[in-house]
Length: 33
Picture 1 (cartoon, rainbow, N blue to C red):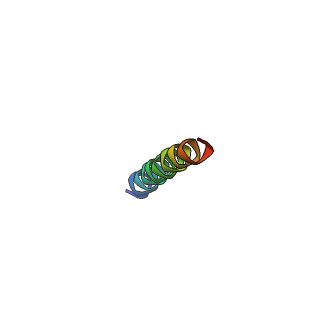
Picture 2 (cartoon, rainbow, N blue to C red):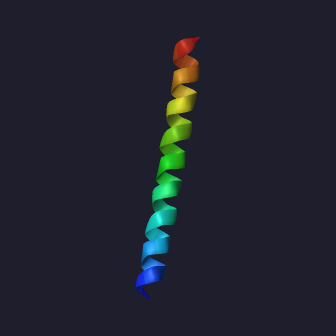
Picture 3 (cartoon, one colour):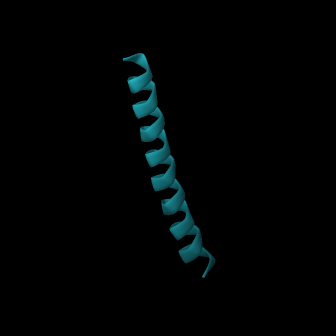
């Protein structure tokens, strides 16, 4: 049970990182123009 929670937390963290990363990437792309 604990492993499942840990894994889902890890997946959620990756999703958040990906969202923030793509947002920052698009922002930097628009700003650098």
